[in-house]
Length: 328
Image (cartoon, rainbow, N blue to C red; front, side):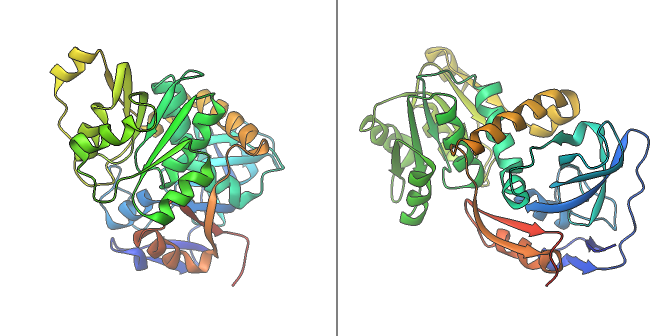
């Protein structure tokens, strides 16, 4: 079987292409899925380096989300088009996928776009619709708004009826991405002292917000807490800046605000029906033109290591996708 196979933990080159990867052997309750396209994510880099929270047993095929069709097994009929979510195994022609990792997909979304929506759009949906409970007319500040999750959050917030979506970015190119995604306002953080500067900058585009999506962490989290309105909610989805912030509980008390966390894979394991509902919403918003991933590169499986290197070098919100049916 054609696949990217990791024999030893390391950098992007550790995901070496092979035509001799072992065929997946589905267990009871799993489906064999013929894969068409897979997204390449930062967690894949952590997995191949051995630094991910769930350590894969060597050798293993990396990749956590792909689009394909059921071959056999599982709850769906053969030929059903699905999004397939796994702990690892998506960078291959076929994968064994647990039933809770399967979600039916409509036929009209091209496989590369569906894969590119994948983890980022799911994360943004659960952060805003499930954790922050964002309501029509409310306002949202998106930190790291030019990243994949940030761009998805802008579109999803607009789809949920947000009255004001403010994107915080660094750099002109990133500002252009956030603007194109539908942000009402774009804040440039270049050279800004975050602790007080973020709140002052936000005052120029409507003032405090009802919710914050935070994939950044570090000092940005504390600065964003100061931007919340009464009864505001901040949802932590990652720590792209590298630092895990310390939250001062007295500040939460004084403003009646809440800090919430999101680990998307817990919903896949515990409440897969919500994951399928999220896919239905995401597909509908894609169809309506409200949510479109920005794909920077689509590469064949043989170039998986190159795709991973592109993500490691900083692809920003431009998604990197593996076309698993394409030959070089």
